Length: 448
Image 1 (cartoon, rainbow, N blue to C red):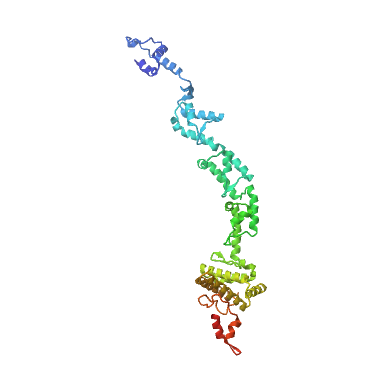
Image 2 (image 1 turned 60 degrees about the vertical axis):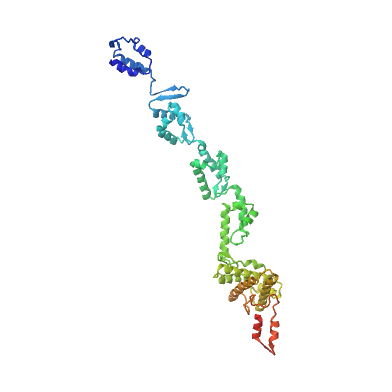
């Protein structure tokens, strides 16, 4: 009975005839008595023969029904490490996406399911980290670094918005789509490294060198400025240099344009002839074709002195009327205007108050004539004369121009809208009494 109890576990799953043959026991006889069962000493023989039927060692290769070879044994982790070490030495490690060793491949070799290997994830992670398992584009990371370094040294890498242009790297290593930098942080870090290097070393591609020389050459002279007179006109610069306006707005071109703008702004802030205040330039230098520069400088200096304390709108209105008057007088064939301009060119200042006043009244008459012509309203012309009168008062108080004997009349105080202003003799003759002169009457006539 004891022998049957001990032998029972070894007999499970085996054919009864084979077991009995090994023990030398005749086929079962249901009428046999209990003393006919195998003796106890046969137990050791049975165990020995059963163990001899199992593979020797901790593991052995077998073939599954689907023909895939696998390793069988109790210590799965040791067997996995043995497989990984063997493939590492042979250079035959099998990887899959995401820089991971292939779980499916090694599960087949071990004869287990993929889910069974979940508990061995730390083992896989250890080998993946130690052996730097790389898949996809990451396999070419070292090559990418070497290629970028060589192209950088040869100055063949293009720059866009201050960064290395990615298109060349993508073409070289077949990096399709714009998501590879998100999927492969190491590649993104590599590109950021070269971006930083380009900024620190002021990197300029070879093909941009010639363009930079052209841009620098134009900026070194007198580039065309915008209407604000404080910044370079990029449209004009682009036409002259052949560099697109968009590229002029980014480095390395933007850097030299910004530097030139800073130089221009420095000159603007210290200019005498074109004073800067209220955030804008009040230019008088455009009149240098007509008026001498030294006189225009006096205009600019004095204008800044009295107009900078005004509101910006008021200063602009006064400036526009002053410039309009100076341009008209400077180009007018009126004899008084010609005398004033000739005197200014010769002496650098306006001395003759009579000719100056006659020139001013001639300009005023030209303004008033625009009302009759229908090109301006009476209120508009009156506002222009008022603004001009403020400019003349400011300049004459600084001894830049002679003061007029009477303020320049506005439209509503004038009886003559387009009539020629009478000369000194014409005004004085009707009011003479003998050898004397009626100055009160003269003043009244001047106000008419």
